[in-house]
Image (cartoon, rainbow, N blue to C red; front, top):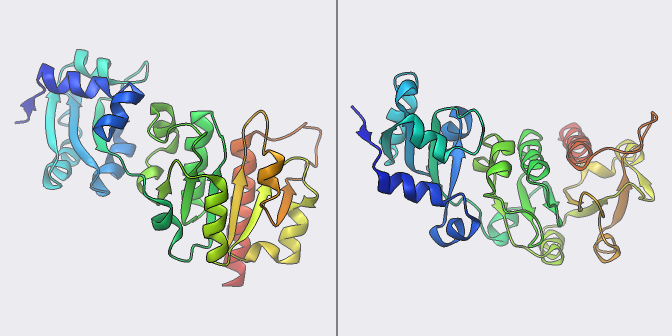
Length: 267
């Protein structure tokens, strides 16, 4: 029998919809069985709210959370609706401890593939890039101070649990991230539709087999000149059809997977 969710605990969790409270509490919300399952496995869950109608179906998840030291509550439909950031709540919502790390932790273990988000503002794009970086086997992701908050609910949802899988450093100036990459012997590439280098050529020449840090810029403005100047090359994704361009998350996926393929081929 799970303890009923008190009004005080629901109120505390509900306040995590506000960024200022997330930052002061060092907590954020994760929603849905997949994301919460990954959060539990990472030891990040502090509290778990299960809708009464779904509690039996998610008993194994509740048991895992309890074993990991989390408090698990039976929540009413009204409580789950208040906590959910979606129009169709999935009945599983967790209060998680923040998971971001410092740049030295994220970049200090000879990484081979890193994605840097430079002023990426759309939370869906940011979360999707985190998910793609995880899927491609990247070693870390870095968010610049101008980028969307990692704990933004839409970013968390778009990552589908991947933010619990790999080191993510937030609030890191791009120049500082590049400097750490240089210390690790990484090549730095800037993704830009107007780049002088073609991604296919980089792949064919073997250049992508080296440890690589990719810089991805703002959805509307791309990378400013001062950040492109930090890179060893500015690389464009070739457009073989009639589309004007790819959106940011799609372009990042192409770049990260091109690097992953080249690195696997070498090793």
